Amino acid sequence: MTNPGKEHGLERAIGVRGLAATAFNVTVGGGIFVLPAVVAATIGPSAPIAYIVVAAAMGLIVLCFAQAGSRVDLTGGPYAYVEIALGKYVGFLAGTLLWLVGTTATAAVGSALVGSIAVFWPPLAEPVPRALILAVVFALFGALNVRGTRQSTRFLEMITVVKLLPLILFIILGAMLAHGPRPDVFGSLNPAKLGRSVIVLIFAFAGIEFALVPGGEVKDPARTVPRALFMAMSAITVLYVAIQYVAQMILGNQLALAQAAPLTEAARAVAGSGGAVFIGVCASISMFGYVSGMMLTAPRALYAFGRDGILPPVFARVHQRYDTPAVAIVAQCVMTFIVAVTGGFAELAILSNIAVLVLYLFCCIAAWELRRKNVHAGGTPFKIPGGPLVPVLAVAVIVWILSNATVKEFSVVGGVLVVASVLYLLARGRTRVPDVT
Image 1 (tube, rainbow, N blue to C red):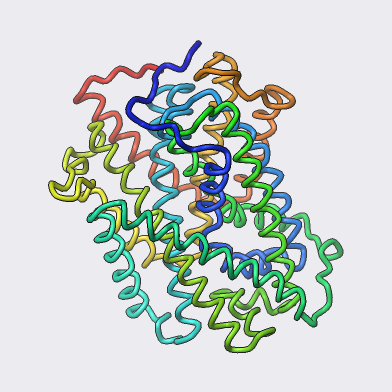
Image 2 (cartoon, rainbow, N blue to C red):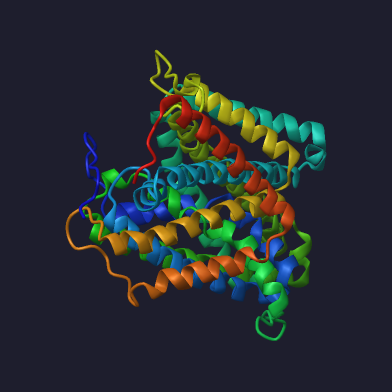
């Protein structure tokens, strides 16, 4: 069957390099400035292996995304894939998970942002100053996004260069100046701890789903999506493994103790206070930019729910002067602030990971179903090597990773989906929207 819907009024201007750059940008966020310490505390010197395991798991998931993205060219990305393959209700749950991922991931990086600043002035880590900083950050980006997307987009373009430069310099200079022994990556591997470290590291690799949201603006999706995703994933994996390995060369066992700003402490060890300030400032700017980008995209889910009658229509109200979903933006800022104040980086990152893994589960099943139904948007769809076996393996890997989550972590995500389901049923009863694929 052909794609049951076409995008109108959007220019297909995103090619392979553009989509790969977008995927790289939204994936390499502020988390990599903090995660090296978290994963080192979880699995020790074998942390680079955990990155490779996550990259392999994400490779299976990306294959499913590549297949789905080559068959469905609608704006919405995973939300569109799931809705077309599995129906409106499951598609709505996928949209809810996208919103939950955006909220918890933004809150996690916001929390890490305060931690990176507090390295230079510890009193800022106290509850009241921390809450005040978070309030200023979210209020600032709320106001910026209400006034229009042009300013936010320009800021994000600048941030892309700012956040990549210090990471590359850290790898090169750190490897040259480190005096510690090479990490015993394989000798200390503990398989029992590998699963927990993997569920932590999913946060570093998540983001591909947001790059695929503008599917209606991608040129020749059957060719562009697969190539762009694998270009981005290859570059991301090399970057992450190098950062972790160099950080362990510099700090050794002390890396696990530098929970607030591990790369800043590593830079201090090899380049003194100047290096620490440089990495710390760049990390803060990178996290600042990540929060800016997510505050640009996440409120659109609330806007869409208001537009579709799931939430009250006020959420779909557009500012008369700036033509932005102002109510949705303000509501998103308030909710993200509350989540950030009540949780730390590690806890929020894992919660975000549970949500994104469930979303990936839906998408992998959707990829299999889209292939079975022969849905295509035009052109020859991307064919996964191994055919239907890859989605099955991807689902099995996701279930294994999720098995390492706690009941509490599952209950939060499950609670959000239950509330969302109630809202969906109430809205469906009011509007009598048929549940069709």
